[in-house]
Image 1 (tube, rainbow, N blue to C red):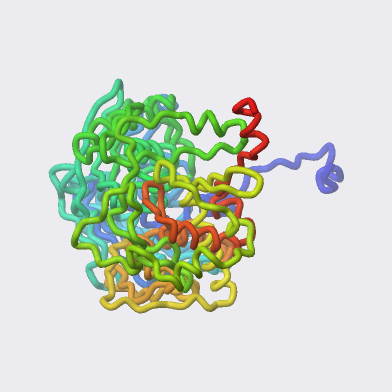
Image 2 (cartoon, rainbow, N blue to C red; image 1 turned 180 degrees about the vertical axis):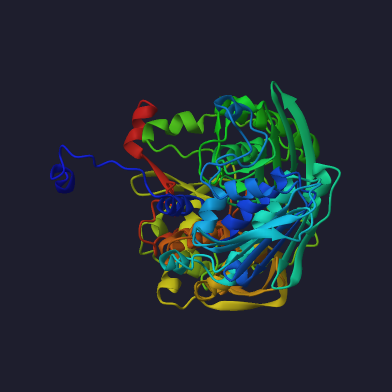
Length: 627
């Protein structure tokens, strides 16, 4: 038993926390950074029937935040009551929680903010002749009285966390904090198309979302420059509207996919995965489209009273909702992007997902005898990129005879149709020293697997997993030595990454440079790519795709050292630079891959943990055929 409690047995020891302390505790849950303050105040403004909301920040909100609205305002009594914990106009009965139509309802935001900042609240109720002003410092009212003001409410907040220095130390650079504020405004704009939102950063207009008549119009304001297609449908009690990009624009991680449930921005990984699954086999695992998903459903089927910041919700039947999202989107995407219907064979010319490599030898013949689905022909590569990046790369291989040749406008292959004597000797006649180098390549199966013969059996390699492992190893070695060579691009590329990403790239400039990139901010929402790792520059990796995936890892590493996630970043980079399922390989490329695997530790698995190779011994083969 706790000594303090034991020493007070028989005495009263449970007491109510002072309001100031309770507000500080609540602030730790609700107010994490300037963007949290903006979110709460903007949501209050929307709930107050505002049609125009202006947000001003200085130094990313670290120095000053001001939120002004033209809503219904407050009378003096309500303005003072708003500073009390759990004081709200949004609900009055338990039953109201089941049918919430407002953003706020907990009654914690304003007192929590006031407990960790200096706040000026000026408000005037509609139809009233004068306004009211209150000044608060650290939760204590220092001044109150009548004031001239337009109808609506204005919060002016300075010196955030002035009395909580430990919390202030965890804030990021102004550029990053400013980016988070920009994301909050974008989310609010998506939720309320009929409201005019303005964001001023250090006195300059950064965002101006004019009133929109439809969701479609508002989404195109917020996600500018993307070709988004609209998909609508109903399934049971769920009405689903989505504006999504084509599969080629998909990104690693769901950071570019916004989800709104009953016009409330939420974070839900399962729903994000449902959107990705609706694309079927044309979207690689781990990649998500750009766009917005709106779900309208009966309010009693969703519980919003789950998270202090109201960022997460709980559904009455999550599986039913996910199934509705998948089906509605798959039907619509099938018409727009020729996405294969779920549960059906892929249409001719589409790429099916890689079939799993059996982990046990007993599964080999069951796998080998599987019939190919209609239209599952091996696909030719549209462009013959190198198999591996780096000095050992074999660039522009000759297409294998069993696959269609590339379009006539492709660059001429680097290797001649018949290898020269010297090249042939290097590739085929020297004595290999490693295990993989001693394997004899037999055939490529389904444009996914490499069938090889060894001294003791048959080996099946997943070509993508194997190439990814080799490239990852070379990147890791170079990064450990801080010697990742960069190759400058002939013409810098511009990547539209959003405000949040620009701030993260600025904060992590040294880490990004150590990976071999040279990335600079180009405005508020874009970066210019001037150099990329030389190990990847000659291959299939595209600079913009790499930068988008790099941002995804940077955002996931928020709150802890980037070094703790560098392996995931390198694995993602390696994945981009490696051959994929459906790529036709010739013997020259396969030989380079096998020899590259001999350089690698833990070559039996790719960086993401999938097996590279499966073995079927000759003894097992003989037993299977009855010899």
